[in-house]
Length: 290
Picture: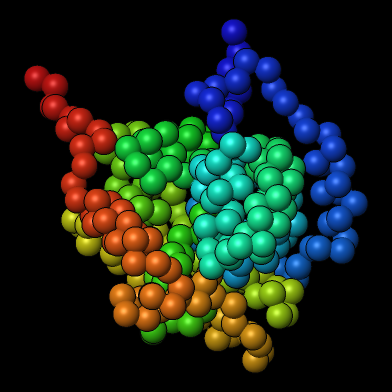
């Protein structure tokens, strides 16, 4: 029995083609395709693109920028119709209340089915925020072994005081490089920083970066994380003056956060960030064969 990639299941036994989605993508491409600027030719091997989100512009622009197939990381809640409306309400309109909240809920419920179908059609990789993150990593390396590129938006909701072009980068996106050789027996893939500029309708892809396997994994991840952030900043600065759109204009300050989130939401987010920094044994240590 042949197995096919599935965003929502371990695998699919029947390959779905989503003709409606691909037909719509074909006719919309002339109108939504952004200007593409490459700093250097891309390697023939699979690449991990790390881009600023720029709200909805980033995902849409990357979908139409290149014809080379890829799979993108996406919040797992958006992939499922059941959880998508609630996530959209909390992520995009957290302060809605009363009548406004009622209509927002209806709108989110209407958007959820086509959004989930579109994500499945692109072969998205669901990103989980708990121990199921191993599923995210498994599907990521399954995609790389198939020879496909990966698209990740690693910026968090918090602004980076030193880099206005992208939010503070999440550590989880960079763990895949240390896992590559250790548990998946593949060479860590090359990385390209990407800056998506809505104001200029432009996508800039920076120079190829490499994960250094000759140093401590933690240090190597931190170095790559800084290189990606600096790369996105350099791409943004290389463009003519334009309006910068961060992932979210939320300050990385507990006191200022109260303007955007309730105390309970702040505490929940802090606990999540803290748990992600703890050493959780998702993969058993490998033992050397005698």
